[in-house]
Length: 300
Image (cartoon, rainbow, N blue to C red):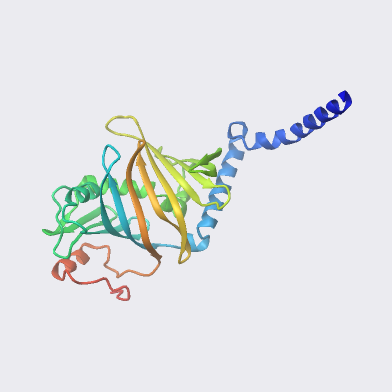
């Protein structure tokens, strides 16, 4: 009996020794910086391939329809609003909100960040962003967005994960680190930690099996409080839309508090927008003809 116990102990010792190097290699704290960066880049490559590879990277336009739930300071839902989100990457966006209730003015003001907006006669409020310019369309007509709203949009462009994966990682000054393995949202994930040249910190949780993004965490320094702000985005219900695997439910938290939740009903990519679709003139046309609809085949 003693001999068998000694033999078993020896086998366990040998087996443990054989697995020790592999376990240490996956420990981010024991990896050399270049090894950690290489593993992080490999995980990012896996993520891009899982999202659609070339079909994902070559996507330059998107259109999604759905419903947005807005949350108050106590975490309670303050209401729902229908939306259509048109994007032309990297820095053009057209957000159209539909009136399901005329009591949603406070929600729209919070979402767009502009006070006093009211539904147009067509039941819409539009926020249009084009680089360093922006406008709104409501009952009073077309109005320029305040500088603060434009600055916030430009900051969102730099934090946008799709922009990072498609475009921004080509910029100089990024640092890469493997953040280890963990469980996030009941999934086994591998963390990638990124820092851009302006000090924004990104943590991406990539599903160990599907290689799709489970959640992202963006950490920045609040200019007013000088404290760290954490913005968390959770991605679920992935579906293949055209050439892109797209999360059809997205949840956003700010400093541990639920901020918004998006339920997408449909998404399409690279369908083509009119040439002036992200220009002020398109809103002026809509004011002249509230019932006018976007014609995707009209490129002029």
